[in-house]
Length: 320
Image 1 (cartoon, helix red, strand yellow):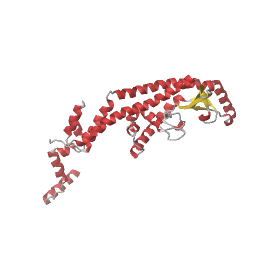
Image 2 (cartoon, one colour; image 1 turned 30 degrees about the vertical axis):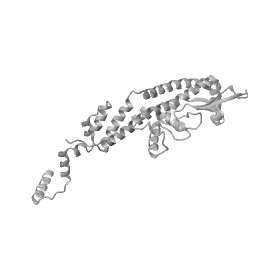
Image 3 (cartoon, rainbow, N blue to C red; image 1 turned 45 degrees about the vertical axis):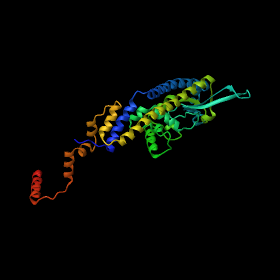
Image 4 (cartoon, helix red, strand yellow; image 1 turned 180 degrees about the vertical axis):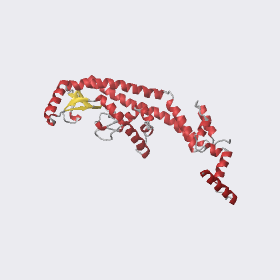
């Protein structure tokens, strides 16, 4: 067999194999990402339990039960109890420059796509958190959960939009203001954090009183969510830098053996025969005997009269 030349298919197969190794390596960046996700889980448990205490302090369970009783008795005029997973928590233990007491409040959304900056409206940051949190699940569904990190410095483009849409669909994102319509993983995640609240107005005018210490604990939970996004970005940046150099090298190589040597130097075992076996053209094009046979088979040769008669006879016999 002659020396195998590189082609696009072989480059892509070799690139993806090495990239998979990069992603599965136990690096400091990956470990920081995994630890940040564990911290998120811990803080979610703490913050959700605290939120339950704070909310039920303002809206006692017995009052909620009473109002539900009246709703069942009188209908919609008494429909003032609803479940929610986002809340305005506020405390009044700080003072302004004049020494006057001031209210400190912020919006805390416990949903999968909840904001990370205190806004009551959804944002791309919430989607970044969701894709980082469920990274392995999305990878298993053939989605690209790293798309936000990979496109961090780029404006919206068709490539980014395509992969973001695939991730959002896989997560069950409703893509609307009413996130109670989320399905699948998003709905299952959100359902853990709904609490009963009293009132008919939006959460902006429904500030729930808490202490400064409680407020700071909620902030710690929200910071943990932002930290997960940041650590995911750092990890993917490290992989992207390596992959950028890998692409340059593979593009410059003329022969597959050079790519195999690169993988070996990186400590990655690549089976050349396996690469060629799964390559649509490798064996056929680069083996002279196979290439000759393939080319001969493409020729529309003129047949003699005797050859045509023999072919016809063989065809008729095959029908009997």
